[in-house]
Amino acid sequence: MAVTTQKAPPATEARHRRPLRQRGLSFEGKMLAPALGVLAAVSIFPFIYIIAMSLSLVGLIGGISFDWVGLDNWTRLFSDGAVWASWLRSVVFFVLTVGLEMLFGIGIALAIYETRRGRNVVTSLVLMPMFMAPVIVGLLGRFLTDSTYGLYAWALDEIGIYNGDILGNTTSAFLAVTLMDVWEWTPLVALIVLAGLTSMPRQVLEAAEMDGASYWSRLRDIVLPMISGVIIVALLIRSMDAIRYFDIITNTTNGGPADATKIVPIRLYETAFRFFDLGYAAAIGLSMLAVTIIMANLFLRILKQRGLAR
Amino acid sequence: MTPSRGGVGSRIGLPVVLGVVLLWTVVPLAWMVLSSFKPADELTATTPTLSFTPTLDHYDALFSGGNNIGPYIRNSLVAAGVSTVIAVTLGCLAGYGLARSRFRGKDHVAFWIISQRMAPIAAVILPLFVIFRFTGLLGSTWGLIVAYLTFNLPFAIWIMNAFFAELNPSLEEAAMIDGASRWSAFRDVALPLVLPGIATTAILCLVFSWNDYAFAVTFSGPDSQTLPIAASQLVTQTSIDWGQLTAIGTIVVAPMILVGLIVRKWLVTGLTLGAVTGE
Image (tube, rainbow over all chains, first blue to last red):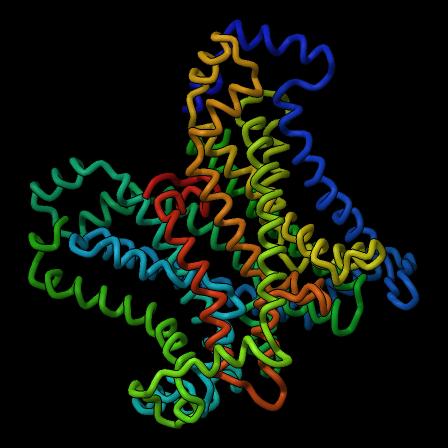
């Protein structure tokens, strides 16, 4: 389809376009202008602003003051053990959540793909968590793990696995917020992988089945290679969102206990809006932005490879 | 690959796997909805129970007295609704412009657009907070609308671009041969064909901004606080009213699940930013 859109414009289109172009902007340009103007206003200006902030000591008393401090915030960032600890925690949180979401998501998609009866109902039920506001997921997680009234806390205690305060201890709190994130976003991975599975040509699979290949060997040799592109898309989408959102942690542990769940965005938010160290927070923010841009680049490159970026 | 032709293992295995998956997904949601109808004393029983006389007490409490959530619902609807309408309108125009144009540097413009959607929220909040403070947008609903545009607008442009690029331009060209202007070729030919795309984009924009917490907690004032803020405010240092909390949770979540499932067929295109199509 990329080919059809890129063929030379027919004569009529050219006739319509030439006079417009002489007057300045082409039709496409005029269509793009309002949105790009608004987008520039809400993104380029703040971007310049955050760079300026990262080079200043920002005061909020009686208006706003910028005191130029050069690279102070940046040298501090690279020598700040607490921020490095947050990055490390972010990486662990990231690997655990995204890893489990991919694993469960692919598994769930395969299971739904095999389902014949009630497939629509099952899919709809499985997708529900991803439409939920993360703040509600966090608060609901708190309710379920509450040591006095919580359903899951009670169940874990009854089975004899755990009887402490789940969100009050470092390891269990970290695991709990990880699982809340996994609960909310596994459906998204399942949905994407399922789309990849249903677009596979059926004949190939049937042929392999006729040849007597077992389910697992079909999965390993045919299915997974065929949907690898879709899996990578799911991985990148989840990766970018994993850095983007922090509502679940804010509303459960807010970084605690003893900093166990203080991933980078939580530390940034606290630095900015609890300690009002806005210049330093800006430096942390820009370092996060750099990581995102690398991933966005990867994402776009894959879109292009698949002929989908237009 | 049908289960009936698989071994005994997969014939028993599949329902078990699906059962576990459904339990894992549905139990927390069902428990939230059930708890919102439970009398207060049953809610705080140390052993969870399924048998109780349903009550609307918690919902009544949310809509009466000093902590009436009516204004919060209105703020949520206005902030999410207006930002969605602006994003989808501008997104349709720009998405079409982007899909039909070939200019040098188009890739860079596209990358710039999509990178806006992926920017970490914490990093976006920071400069906006300072800018809003001296422009007076802090604490107003307009501030929230602008904040939601930072992610809804790039999203809408990108997705509409993906939907328009799927359309073969020959239809528009045929209309133009018949004398239609470029604008009417867009409005009367292309636009009606991407209605599902517009619906999907609008619903996803609505879900993203309705569900937002981070922007709202930083930018909203007493007159512009949204529903997620009302929910988090039910948690205080001393106590949490779980009855009201599960009730408000149900109110926040139910409409989004409903509208989200309506566009399920096109959801993949929307949520993968056009990288994967079809269910």
